[in-house]
Amino acid sequence: MSVQTKDISEDRFADKSRKHLNNVALRAYSVQKKSVRGKIEDEQIAELLPMVHKIARRVVIYLKPPLSFEDMVSAGTVGLVRAARDFDPSHQAEFKTYAYIRIKGAILDELRGWSFMPDNLRKRIRMAQQLSRKITEQTGTAPADTELAEKLGITVEELYETFENARAQHFISLDGFGEDSPVLSNLLASSHTIAPEEKIEREELIEKLTEAIRQLSERQRQVILLYYHQQLTMKQIAEILEITESRVSQLHASALFNLSVKLRQWKDGRL
Image (cartoon, rainbow, N blue to C red):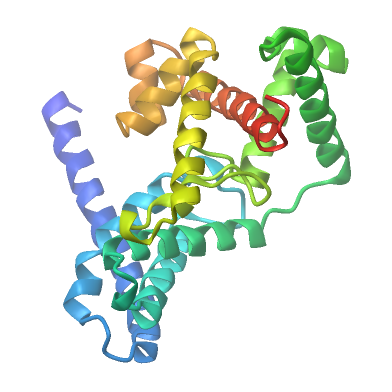
């Protein structure tokens, strides 16, 4: 197969995939729209369907069977329609901002509902978190992956598996660090609705997050900035850094683990 023929074939497949996902979203929308009571027009909801796809794409690396990307699109669409039903313009927040939070919340709920994990993995994650916090408190910096693996008595590959399971279980990301940690997406509301004390807390959180990112290794920092700031996929980052996509995923999971430990310490007043 020539390069040109391959490109045409891939384009057709991508176009077919987009149409299929649009159909998934529209089916979910048609089921839920009867609950909307006219606060938001159908056209406004339809315009935000691409946002559902965009948010769903951000969680692909967290998916575990039996969940699929289509499930995330359906869940996000339900969140969008419910946002239209519940939106109150008197709060002076934009509908798009409110919808983003509800879409992501619906997708998170769907993920958490299927996040089953054996007790031994939960125990290993907990041990890794506790040990990482202890080392960070003693030294001021997060332990290297090799050091943490050695102290846990496991291989580095097993440690990366632990990180990736922690990422899938708690969905720690730059938009949300788990249910019991600071969540940046909660701060996306219009500035008119943010109380002075909340604004101060948000600014301090961003400052701590920036500091924590600076303390990551160079490769971890590159992955985080390319993934969240540049909105690149794991595959695109792998091509830029000339490493495997699997290695990018490992670096991403390791970086998020370290960031969540640092922010947990900040919230507990240890930093």
